[in-house]
Image (cartoon, rainbow, N blue to C red; front, side, top):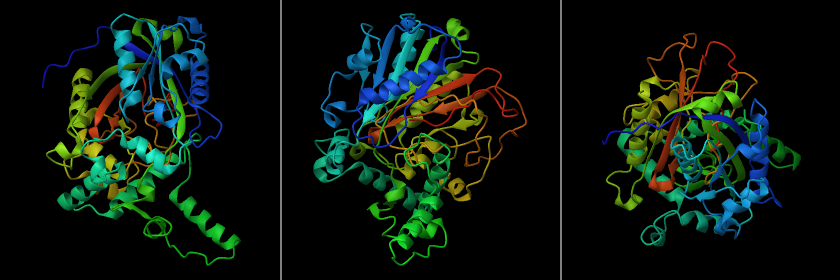
Length: 437
């Protein structure tokens, strides 16, 4: 692999905001983006003049088809009062906002700008389901894959089938990933559903009782998830709760040069490393049990940061479908090939290394956010997948988090590591990342 270059100067994240995610009739992308933008302004510790902002980078997959609105970046600049600043839209399917962050970091690191805003937004729910499916399908190979009948559930179902055949995972393994991620999503007040599988199960029972219908006798979450009526097959082995929902939402971050960081934030997050790579369409892949671009992008980010997978204490991975989490954790080196499913089966609680709820339990956005959010209410207790050989939570050390994004089946990934000064797991730290996408 070619030598990974360092950033010409340091870049820090000093503010972040996010809209509520869900289905919002009557709201447009611009409404959602303004909501996230205003929250970002309020999150900055030190008073600052928005006139200091010098450029806007917007990640958006397809406002053209979802809303009939192209040329989105200048419109969002207008609605946030940033005109006549340079405003650029970045489209990279599922990695759109991650790629926008990548460009924002480069813009600051190059010295071109000192202060930039980067955001992601999508408004997906105004279209009927079949139109949403058609729009998302434009991220696939429309010459070979779509005419053959593939949709994105079909792509990931093919990967899941291959993975299960090769390594021994089962549909129940995927269900356990979904249970964990819904549990974590229930901790996020801005999540689309914000409910555990057990909560949804009990709600279905209560609804049946209210309507005078037979009350289902599911004994546990897995029995509920095996019910074809409650959790129908979408593309075997993927069922409804293996798939993230479409959603409306936005997220925004403020990036500044390292020398200015303390003028904005009491506890800035410094960019330690990042990586991006691409791959061909699924039908051109040599195998289905790995996403090479994710692996390569992770390696680039590790190399830039001067760390390895063993140094990562908190990871958020893309889980548009439950199988995507298993592939990502292996491609990023957290588990040996073919072993992530075994850790998912154990579902251990271990705060030293955590996987957040990501898309399942929150929402699928192509792609709103820039995966970092400041939480001042102390550490939340996320359900995790544990790795052996980690340090104990009482040990102190600078923390590094990995936020990979993978663009659809093409797997264009932008993985960024964030480093925060003097943060330990020992105390109620002033800032902790919460999953956004």
